[in-house]
Length: 166
Length: 232
Image 1: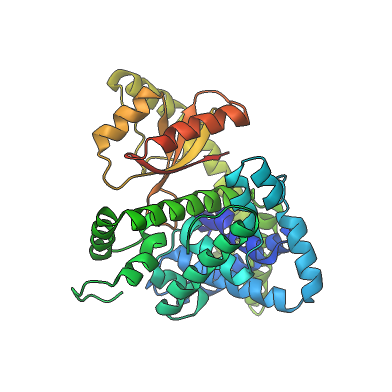
Image 2: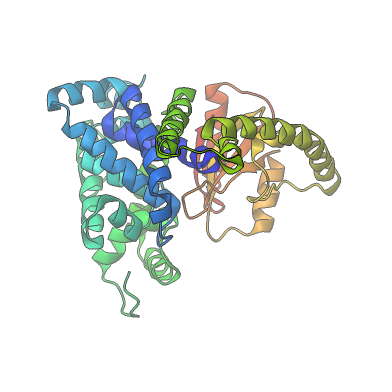
């Protein structure tokens, strides 16, 4: 358990934090996630990677936690938790910092879009694995990723960066 | 994904670009995307956009920090509690039960801590030997299956997360790292397909601007490096 926890805790924490937007809540949730992993260890059939299984549990916990909170409170917390020191997209563009603008836009995507972007780009999950974690068909994973990227381009365009796509 | 040999449509190929960039497609799909990208400059440009997004998504996630030790404490307290509840109905406690106590999470955590201390001491000796070996062989690689960086004397320095291009040969990567006095210290990262490595890009801690400059050098070697972002 120690090895499993040490190996996965940081990435699971980051995944949950990106969903719930509150560090204290994310920490409480990953304790619960790994407790569930410990409880269900004998039920893990090894048909998917351990990280995929743990992320699926984490996602379920995070969404349940989000449902228990009023949306307004959540949005406010989320903005606070993911606030970085970069400027808003427009100001970033003025500073010719395209990277910062892109990061800012990644933060303001909807939770659904953030989730798929993070799973593919950061957690390096295949189409099948994203489908397992999120609980949607593989075709929907591809479509959701496409629309997440499209939204990202639109946000960048609003901020003054036209990527010429889509 | 489907196993037929049918050629994918242009839309299908484009939809797979994020997974191609992340290195998570199977061999057949990888070949098809690679061929399509090579034949279509607009698709190649779109792949560059995907890589930009991926670099910033990784950078953003890496900047989120790590959970506090409170998480581990809470977890093992909870496991401890559940084990005690599970054992509560037992009225007779024999030698077996007493032995089981030795393996409660708390006791196990303590034992693991003590074991780590022993391993670290051993690692000090091993790291010295490894470093000596590295000086002798001139190798800039630490294999992915090697012990974690913390036990190998590579804790000090400045680091980047790097994914090497699929077509890059081991010899080219070694030369590239040697020319920058860089070394792979950890990886591939757990959970992923195994493409991301932690690379020490400078022997000492350098400031944010200098680290970004060093990372840009990696990014500019696009024939060898498909992604590089600063990390802690």
